[in-house]
Image 1 (cartoon, helix red, strand yellow):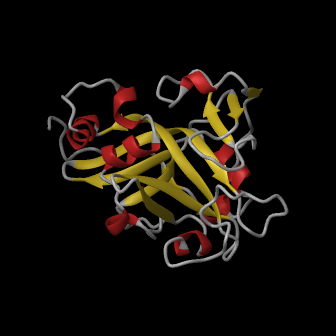
Image 2: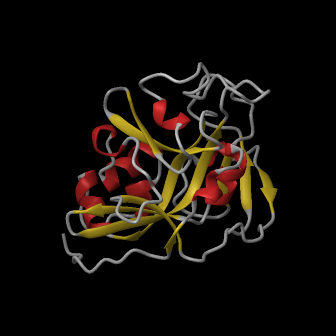
Length: 227
């Protein structure tokens, strides 16, 4: 791995209040923020460019696609704790996906991180993915399973971590970048509540997943600062 231990964390940690809002609002706000993970050679980091919101069971609109829709269980307990924590789960017994808990304690809202634009530690990301150094950015972190693999995120190591703790090896940060145009589409890769427009994408970014599914996208203008 060619990158050194001098990889530095970009920006500042987000605060708890950022996540104490409905999951669809948190999802929109997370676009442009940075997910950072401490690796073997220093920090790895990527800009969040695609997310999906999942609604908690307290909401009037049912969301059977959400892991929290039947209430708290040993598996999904991280979603019902304080906002700003990682909920990591496995799919097909092969890959991991990561959600961020949001809303108030007990509400079970979550935001799935679907794609990142790599910023720091690309060599280590490529190594984690089994790819050659210099692999295209889209091959590293485009898709929820890929981004977890690239950053070395697993359920055993990362589920329940506080993403806002300066000592945490997994953090959510703000480096001052503000999202421009945002596309909003139905969520993808699910069987239930497929009509809900709860997938949010940074328009024009080359690292988003599933570009063929954007035909029904709505376009939203840049938002003001949410800090």
